[in-house]
Amino acid sequence: MTLRTITKTPLKKLILSGVGALAIGAAAFALPDTTYAQAPRLMTPPTGFGGQISFADLVEQVSPAVVSIHTEKTIEQPEIPSEFQWFFERQFGENFEEQFGQSRQAAAEGSGFFIDGEGHIVTNNHVIDGAETITIRLNDGSELEAELLGTDAATDIAVLKVSAPQGQPFVTFADNVNLRVGDWVLAVGNPFGLGGTVTSGIVSAIGRDNGMGVYNDFIQIDAPINRGNSGGPTFDLNGRVVGVNNAIFSPTGGSVGIGFAIPAQTASFVVEQLIEKGTVTRGWLGVEIRPFDNNHAAAVGLDSAEGALVVNVQPGTPAANAGVQSGDIVIDFNGTKVDNARTLTRAVGSVAPGETAKLTVWRDGSEKNLRVKLGERNEDQLAQAEVPSDDGASPTPEVTSELGVRFSALTDQARQQYDLPTDLRGALVTSVAPNSPAAQAGLQRGMVIYEIDNDAVNSPSDVESKIKALQESGKEAVLLRVQAGDRKDFRALPLKKS
Image (tube, rainbow, N blue to C red; front, side, top):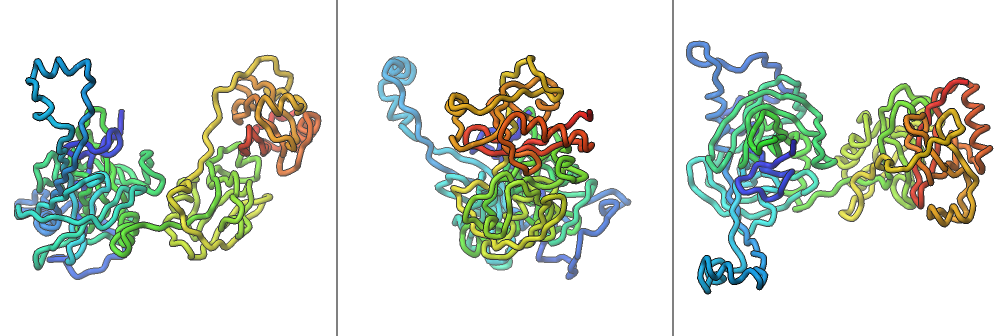
């Protein structure tokens, strides 16, 4: 199974195929003059003549705002090795290089939609990425040349500008969408270059992570979308744009009923900045974060593994200035409950640099409230620094500890072998038994344990005595601070009761 994008000529293999015809935003024309606090709870779609289900009225309202996008760019042809020149001369003649040249024009199709009467069009970044010319085809068949105002690769959103005809219909992003799984949605777009195609379906899932960017929290829909639908709108039954079609999950390259749309809230935040200044700025904390498990939660006194673990705080950053510490678990950011590390990344990115946010962390068994003035994230800074799970160690079965780990003292030879700092103190992990509590915690040979539950340990005997005391106290897990090479991290070691 692969994630594919849905443009006629894929611009990026694997992830972005141009699923842009899912929805059609709120039409600013011929729609009721009503402001909705949330999407209304329509149990069934509208009915037409004879009581049959019909979306015809809605489609007539929103379709004129949806456009087809045609792009072209020059692709440099690879130079033919001299040893193969004879083959091409035999097949195509001696002047084959003049026929084929060293470059060619590549075309691609996508979708987009007007969001105002000034000619601004929203689409996907991958639809127009690298394009030298961008042509917009309106609902009536007329064509306009488009200017690229700005792009945001992190969310795959782009904004174009055209000289729109007077009275050009447009649609708008929904506020406070409050979508539920099972809600009806419509998709209008340009699949396979056909243009003006409408499909319907339901919301299959919300808050989906498909690995296509840390700032997106995708809506999964089953309205059929295919190549060329990328950048199109996803509509609710009131004609409001609730998402921007982005990608499909498919083993064949065609629709199998699993499509992804960028939520309206995310898209509108990005679009507003692209129109205003052509780029997107996001808040920045300056921390390295990672998820954690139930053992870690038990070790620090939390009931569940919800939150984001701060592994490191970079000196001089907004987080450092606000008093954030390594080992803190962020559980709330500016009123947003932090379920995991991705949630925190998206929440921070949605706040403008320079603004002050409230941060709630779990530290030493209690909540602490901090205030942080966010900095601006630069492209050379990581959007999210999750520490990967360690694997690939070579554990040995000769382990004496009931927890499945053996230690030794740090020697100069060990420091050199494992590239460890000369001033580091602690206990060196020399072996880990398979399927043991230590293996479950992710301990590996070559790691150094230098803190247990925030207390420094300097030797294997320190580690053993500390763990034994915690076992006797009835604690279910213990928090270890470890170092491998120059990288520091946390591990939560489950304890067997003695």
